[in-house]
Amino acid sequence: MLDFFQGLEGTVYWVVVLPALFLGVTLLTFGGDWLADGASSLAANFRIEPVVIGITVVSIATSAPELFTCLIAGFRDQGDNLVLGNIAGSNLANVALILGVAGLISPIIGRPRYYFWEIPWLLLATIIFVLFCYGGITQFEGVALVLLMISYLIVTLRLRPFFLSVLGPIYKKLGFIRDLAQVNIGNFDELEEIEKRASSTAFFLVIGGTLFLLVGASLLVDSAQAIAIRLHINQGFIGLTVVAIGTSLPELAASVAAARKKQTGLIAGNIFGSNLFNMLFVGGVTATASPIEWDGSLKKELFLMLAVTAFLTLVFRKKSSGHRQMGRAMGFIFITLYMSILIYSAISLAPVVK
Image (cartoon, rainbow, N blue to C red; front, side):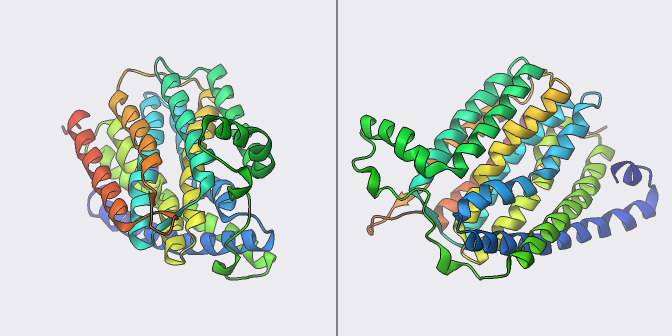
C-alpha cells in the first residue's frame, strides 16, 4: 500500500490517503474489542492466568505489524535505522503511552509475578538488546535473541513450578521473600471478571480481531508513512514515531478495550509480552535474515527505552490495604513522559524538510 500511496498525486492523493487513515482507526477499534473479548474468554475456559494469555496470544498477535515492518525494512537500503527506530519506538510507546492511557482508564493491579518474573526478565532482555545494538546485531546474536524468547515462553507457561523450585528460593535467599507459599504466582484468580463464551466463539473473536488489527494498522501506518516520506523526514525519526506508534496501535486498541472491561492482567501481559517479542523475536528474526547494521544514531533513544523499562519497577504503588496498583496519576506521568521523549527526539534527530 505504501508504494500505491506514494504514486498518487494532487487532490487524488488526499482523497485516498485520508479515508485510509479513518478506515484504519475503525478497524483497530473493532479489532481491539474482539481480541480482548476472545482472549479473556480463552483464559477463563482453559483456566490460564489472563496475564499469560496477554503475554502469548495477545502480544504475539498485536506485535505482528512490527515483525512484518522490520523484516521488510531489513532488506531495504538504509532500512536498519527504521528497524531499530521501530523497535525502540514501539517499546517506548507500549510502556509510556499505552500503559499510561490504560492506567488513566482503569487502575492496573500489580501482581507478584510482575516483580519476580516479567519485569526483571524484561529489564534483562532490554539490556542485552541495547548491548547487541552497539556495533550492529549479527546473525549469531539474532539467533541468540530468538532462543531467549523461546526460553522465556517455555518458563512462563510453567511458571509456578519453576518459581517454587528455582526462582523462589533465590529470592528467598536474597531476602525478598519470607514464605514461598504466600506468593500467589501461577494461580488463576480472575474468573469473576471475565464474560464466559464458547471456546469456538472465543477463537473466532481472537482470529477476527487479529485480522482487523493487522489490516487497520497496515492502512494507518502506510498512509502516515507516505505523508512523512513525501515531506522528506529523517527515516530514524519516522521509525521512532510514525511507524512505531502506528505498529503499536494494535497494542493500544487491545489494551484500551481490556481497560474498559477492567481486565488488567491482559493489559500487563500485552505490554510485557509485546516488548519482549519486539526485541527478542522481531529483532532476532530480522537480524537472522539480514544482519542489522548500526550507524551510531538512535543511541539516546535506545537508552531512553532502557530507562523507561527500568521505571516499571517503581510504578505499582503499595496501598494501605497491602495491594499494589498503578493508578491514574502514574498513567498521566507516563503519558507526559512519552510526549517529552517525542519532543526531545524530534529535536535531536532534526528532521530535514527540503
